Figure: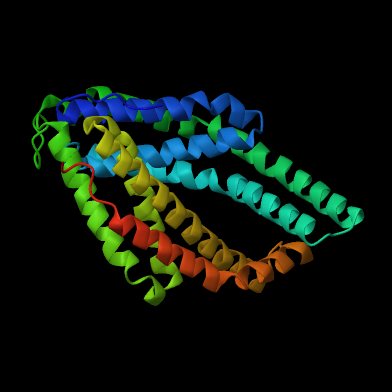
Length: 295
């Protein structure tokens, strides 16, 4: 749900955003334990949004507690990754089978195979979400957000009472500059560099959503929606390019990708140049959008 920030101090805004992210994580726990793919996806988004918020307000909440929180949230996000990756792979493989007119026996066999793998993956995911460590992570985050040392107003590196709109403009401008600069060099970037750019794009999207209400007006709203649209396209195409690389690595290493998945990877690789062109176009579209936080 949207975050209502109004004209709060930066420290209060960080707390409001962190609470919003925590709500997204906790509200999806029953669905994750029931094996719901969308609930798992939303929980992981909540974790990534929270990590983004901490990074965006890093100077305000600096301290050893922040480092510990960041490390544990990274663990939680990574621990929930395999089941989500399997969901995405299954969807893509079955889509490929439909598009290539595979016979019913092949399609049914692949569906059953993924169902078995998925049941095993989600059993592990349920254990993680209900583990003492996972629950302790969330409790530690709540305690740190509400009563941690940083809340005493003695931040070493930043003014916690600084108006959040000023802080937001600075964060957004820095991320925008970084994305545009890296995006201009897309054809030269390695697969790893493209992946890092995708993370920056994702972080910028989350921050735009965090701070959307701080810059009202029809013109700002139009610019904001244009930026989000082009960033989503850029993120999606970079994600597809990253999938090609990671799935090819699985095939090359002889991991548990069957013939159907291997055939899908080959079909995806044939589209790599087209995807790169789409990513360049999306970045060009984003670069043309004026900053909505300046007017």
